[in-house]
Image 1 (tube, one colour):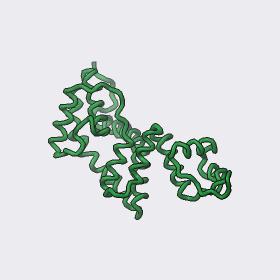
Image 2 (cartoon, helix red, strand yellow; image 1 turned 90 degrees about the vertical axis):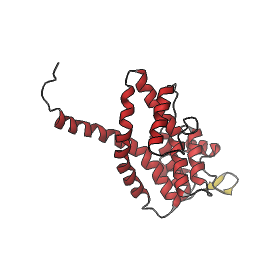
Image 3 (cartoon, one colour; image 1 turned 180 degrees about the vertical axis):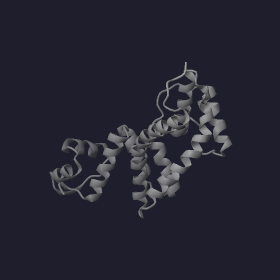
Image 4 (cartoon, helix red, strand yellow; image 1 turned 45 degrees about the vertical axis):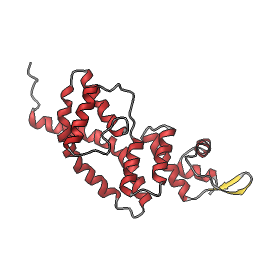
Length: 213
């Protein structure tokens, strides 16, 4: 297909596609003439993934490049590639980290025998967790750390469902891409479902009578 058809099938404007090509987010098409190139279904698939990373995930071009590099790495195990992708799609933010929050995170990791990503300077995921606890401390909610253990136990059930969803695919590339899109969309779904769960549990635990002063 030519770039116009690629644009039509993907819903991405031609100038945007050309920008992604210049930035290396989309592989070059096969030249059929000096001014024309042919694109195939692999280009369409990669283009849809890039749009998901940018539009759904809110990732920068540099972060998208990191995700794609992790996906395209051939000499890593699938487990390691999944970890690299999760690191790439995680945004560490700019919150100043509280040393006590860092200590809470390190203690949490130690309790669960995790050593691979315990360093907040080496892991975006761990940095995100320390930043969240730092924000809590800054407004007087340092006890948020007490939720880490029950959260982890609950989220293992979700992680199990996530992995069962993505490993339905037979191609490693399909598994990785499903994890990327599933994580980005799943984060939004989890936010919505968490609010629904709060409403249901609140109704059971507190009831709908007037608040007590």
